[in-house]
Every structure is written in structure tokens, then in C-alpha cells.
Image 1 (spheres, rainbow, N blue to C red):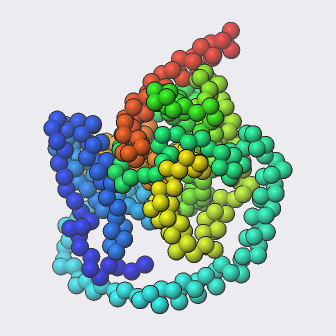
Image 2: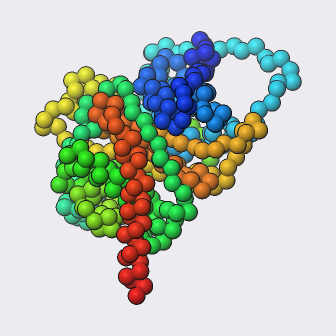
Image 3: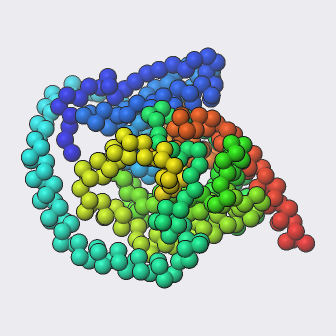
Length: 403
């Protein structure tokens, strides 16, 4: 990692104002334009936006960062350290800045080859054996009819409206719930808080697809990023995530039946991930040259492969859940009221839902493709509708078991 010799702070720091009346809808509309413009890959891959003009005189700070630089956990740790450490006026003139020279292509290739030989080639035989053993174990233990991993690997995800070739424009919406209410719902339903969140999302997505006359008879396939960090909880950069795959049973009308089926599939998906190993797919990337991955992605985007009638998505959407601070913190003498986080889209998967908890709030951020999911706010507003429906169904079921 080197410093940009042509670093220009004006590119990285931006300021904008919301149109009147400066409510949450206007804020979401302005934020939707920020990810619609890709980061310049010849510059450091981050930007900060200060958004003013909110009706309640608050300001919104948007951090835009490439996913290779930081995942959810790293972003949260970075935000907490920077904003809690405070800012101080310099007591002396800062030293002159002398940028580093940028290495040429030949030097970069040579250094990459040395690292590859030193760290990867010698481990390739044992890595291949581990992959083979994990695949064999999965085949023996998993039922193709219920296994999220096997269904995903066979390309059996149904195609819904947002599983098409993506445009560069993004749609954006948010929703918020109380953490204590979701915990109370968890106690009645059983399972984990993440199960409750997935159950709520399943109902909201089902209702949206019903309204669009696009609900498939099969369950949807969902990718769930899972942290590979089991010991280091302080990392502030880098992407260290594995992916679990689960079935979201949107085809089931009964909210409790849908919740329980999705919960069981999620548990099975996590078991399969542990069999394969959380580091496996990250290590696999070491043996595939980046140029091959980039060319494949660009070809899929350029030829609009996801718009083909026979094309089926590997997954329908992504849902991630990052536990955040349990107490509000201050920055520059001001209380940080809420934290929201948004994840990236990949070609053919035009919906990403990221959930961050903060104090007693659970904040949902939905990012979609404007072409394939222009009314993303319908899913966002449907989240609380489904929470109420699931809460009512759980209360009836709870009373029935108490009698």
C-alpha cells in the first residue's frame, strides 16, 4: 500500500444539500445518487459526503468506501475509533509531505509472483485435498431438496424482477425498528435475532413480489456474509467475510411456517459453511488471477447475460447483519443519532439489505438497481408491516402453548 502522489482532498470530501422539506425521503433520494457513480480506481477508493439541509437541523455524513478496503466489521471499528478519538487543532506546522513513487507494472507483477510462490503455491496440494473432502462430506450429509448450498451450486434459484442485468443507477431506502421489540419477538419464536430479521425480510419480500405478480413457487436463495474473524474484533481495514447460503421461504403464506422453514434452512446453511470452512473461498481467490475474475465480470455486464431468458441467478439477494454499539456515542460534541450501512450489488442480483444495530435501534438499509427495483421503498415500508404480522402470529401461538 502506497500514498497517492497526486492526492486531491477535493475529490474525497464532498458537500451537498437536501431539497425541501428535508425529510427522510429526500435524504434517501440524495444518498441513492452517491453509489450510482463508481469510485475512480486511479485514486484512493473512498469518499466522504456531508449532507445538509435536513428539517431538524441535523447533518448526515456518508462514508463511501470500496468493499475490498473494508467489510462491515472493519467499517464499524474504523468509525468508532475515528469519531470517538476526537479531533484537535494542530499545535505545530505539519511536516512537509513527500509522496512515495508509484511502482511500475513490472515491479507489481514481480512482487505479486514472489508473494504467490512464497505463500500460496506450497499450500495448493493440501488446499485441493481440503476442498475435495469438504465437497464429499457435503454430498453425503446434505439433501439436495433442502440444502441451500447444493441448490445454489446447481443454479436453481428462481429468477425474480431484480435478477436482471444491472444499470449504474441505484435505488435506496431505510427502515428502523426497536431492538427490544425484536428481542421479545425472538423469545416467543425461538431461534436467534438474525432468524427474526430474516423472517421479517422474507415476509416483506413475499408481499412485494405478490404485488408485482412475480412471486415464484420456489424459495429464494439468499447469500449471508459471515465474518471470518473469530478472534480479532478490532480490524479496521480489509474484507474478511465468508458467505453462507440460505433458503428464504417466500412461497409459504403462513408467517410462522415461513419463519420456521427459513430458520431451519439458515441453520443448515451455517453448518455447511463450517464443513467447507470459512476461509475456503477467500483462499480460493489466491489461485485465480484477478484479471480472469475481472474479465468474466466485465463480459457478463457488457453482454447483459443476466437478461437472457435461460439465465438463472446463483442467489436472489444478499442480507447481512452487523451488531453495532449498544450505547450512543458523540463526535465533535454532537451525539451520533443513528448508523446505517449499505452493501454492494453484483451483476444479476439487484437487491442488497444490510442491517446494523445501534443503541436500541435496528436499522435496515436497502440498496437496489433503479432499473429493476425502482420502488424499493415498498419493501422497506413492508418490513414493519411484516414485523407486526409476525408478532401477532407469535402471540397467538405462544398463548396456545401456554394453555
